[in-house]
Image (cartoon, rainbow, N blue to C red; front, side, top):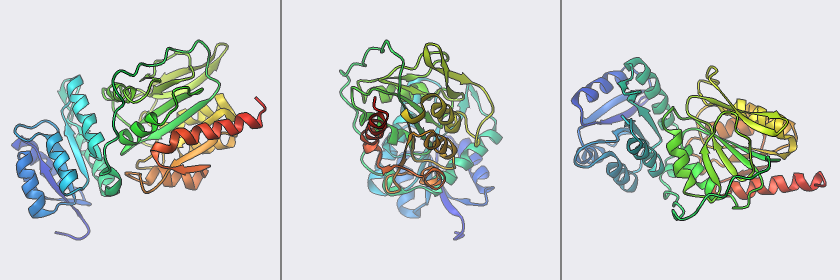
Length: 359
């Protein structure tokens, strides 16, 4: 194998998909295919024999399915795994999200709106996912999966007053696992609204919101255009739409739009962070979590310039340290912490600014 190219094992029960993926990946300068497997059992044998750098793994397969295979990989021989998902149902989406919680680096969607996506589009997305896999901190993604809170926990009723403080969060590759820890770390009496931008396509963010809602008594949901921003609520940007915060006579409210991608992604964190800085000023905290690229760094700088607090995920727990590193270089950070400590850090920063303002 070429020392300059990362080796990839393709695992899919479809012979056609294996052939297409071999051709697509074989045309990438950074990667080469070391082998293929048609089911989970073959995949585990191939990993032991070939030691690939990266594995692409179909979510739904007969015999040993994608999730069971992924669990074995992360337990026996951890390495970056990119899931291939044909999810078109709630159950399929949940399987894909569960794979991310178990340690998969990213996923590539094979279908959209009930139709197969154009191969050129899949190739671009797959290339991006493989680059993220190549940059992955395997120790971070192979950590134990965050445990969900008991299902009996009930969301706090919607507050009647508008939020006077805000926490804005950016996440990309490795984000769902990090977000689970962040949301679980929030106090039940959080007197601020939280906004989350996770780089994720349409059809998956509603499922992510449902899963995050199991971890906290706070209300968690996909954001809706025009809704009033209330304290004690967590608003997740819908896949494929930017989320901003606008101000009006009744207070801050959500503004969704279908503008062009920013930094190649939609939703992007920078448009949100800039508007959170304008709406909440020193009563805002920005948080940049794991991910590829630089989204969130300029927005975090805007929050800092408005007097707000800044938090960046530490390198040791970041699946991919690109976004946190860039944010730290551009905006700096009041605190550099693991995701499980974000809630306490954000509350501390908001309390300090509250005390300084004499409120």
